[in-house]
Length: 407
Image (cartoon, rainbow, N blue to C red; front, side):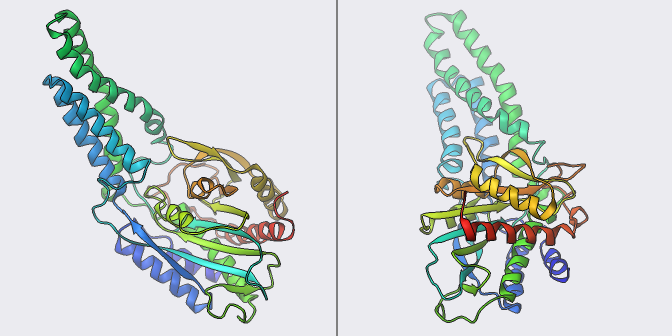
């Protein structure tokens, strides 16, 4: 348990993106690897750590401005304001163009640990196991903000209708004053629920760093600890580096046919910037599979999420990879994992690249999947004897994939 205690000590402090604490965490994880002779590489990318704060401030400011334009009868300018307000959000969030999220941009670091079978540089297939080491705090947890996410498309519709009301008021003002007044009143009424939704969502996004802080022990420190301990296990079995003397890859006889990449991402809590940057940065063998770990080490059942993506688009996780992982969980624990609903995780970055992907985690018996991004996500919530169990599951998964691939 010594390795887990040390790792969880590193991974159980608030470490939001852009913070000195996150940079210190990355440095300590790299030093932990060096002390154990684990070769690693660092994938650097441009990260926008205040992504959601910028989105939150923009949502509030632009929609207050839109409401004022409606009340003041600015006509076609009202519609233009609505279009700009929504377009900026969509360009930043959906198309990842940092129009307003660029302030505070810096270099992010993903930590990559690679293993190849002894005596080969090209095993022909690859498995990727990932988790994220950044944390996040916000007033509302995952379940509490679910209402806002479900209502977001309705909010977009209200913004469009409110914007359209502006020019319609002017168009009908001289032709049909009664209809013009009706449209004006309707537009003003639409702004009430629109502003309520925008203010709640915007404040939740913008005020996270001012909220009581999450330690990120479960989300997602425990998963990182499991992956790093797995790397330590493989390194204990490591062969002397020969064919890969100039490479960062570790050689091990645990593997026969598979290159294994263990990825510890940052930026997951700011729209999965780290995993997306990594997934786009390289090519993959035709036979590649990915497993993303989320919220491991809790006291409830294992869970395999059935969908991953964003609030605008969810994609099914791969059923064959999920079945293989389910067999591995049952082999190690005697119990099959339950099925979970949608999740927004780093797994989506690999799904977008066409890589068969599964997402594995755990539930808390009492909390289930609540209480994250808050002080209730702390070290007391981690069940330490489930961490080596997680390593056992990874061993079983990789052995299955290495020997036979995905059936």
